[in-house]
Length: 248
Image 1 (cartoon, rainbow, N blue to C red):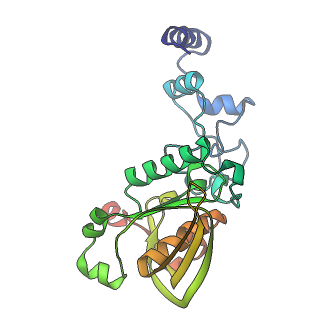
Image 2: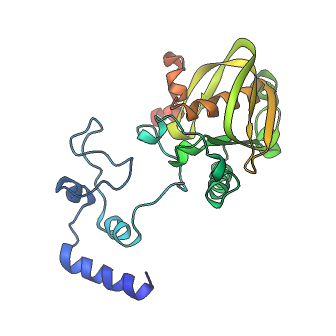
Image 3: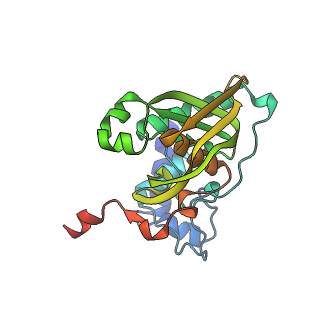
C-alpha cells in the first residue's frame, strides 16, 4: 500500500471510529485476535489489553507483525510452550530458513544475549543460535568468569539439534531468559554436553562444551521442547532484577 492509500485509509478510519476506539473494545466485540500473545476475552490471562487510538490505526494500516518477530516472545505466549518441529530437508538452505537465521542473530545481538531459539521469535522450528562474543565476556567480572567457567565462543547456529550429556554432574548458577524478561533464578545444569545437528547449509556440525557454554546450550535446547528455565529453577531463588530499585 502506497503512502496516499495509507493516508486515505487513516482519514477514513478517523471519521468512522473516532478517537475513543480501543483495540480491546474491538476484541470484546468479536474481532479477530491480533497475534498469539493477545489475550482472549474471557481467558485466564485476564482482560484484553487496551490499545491506544494510534496503536489501533497503526495495526489497521500495517497489519499484525508476522514471525520471525523483531522482538522476543514473552512467557505466556503459546509459542513458547509448543514443541518445535524439525526443519524439513527441502527447507535447508532455502530463503525462509536463511531469513529466520538472520533474524535470530540480529535480535540476539541487539538484545546482547548469548543464545536465542526460533520459538522465541514465534517460529515453531528446531533452530537456535549461540554466541558469546569477547565484548560480553569481558563485561563480566574476572571472579564471575572463573566461578562460572566462562569462555567466549563464536557464532554457532544449529538446525534440528540433539543433545548428549557428557558429564552428568549438576552445577547450579543463576540464569535468566529474554522470554522471562527482568527475572533470574538458580538452575541446575549438566557440567558438560555435546550438541549435534546441521548448520543452515545442511552440513553436519558437532560441538562439545562444558561450563557456561554447556549451560547456554541446555537452556536453548529446552526452548525447542517448550520448556523454560522457570520449569527447572529453584523457585525460592526466583528474583526480579529490579527489586532493589523498587525499594530505593
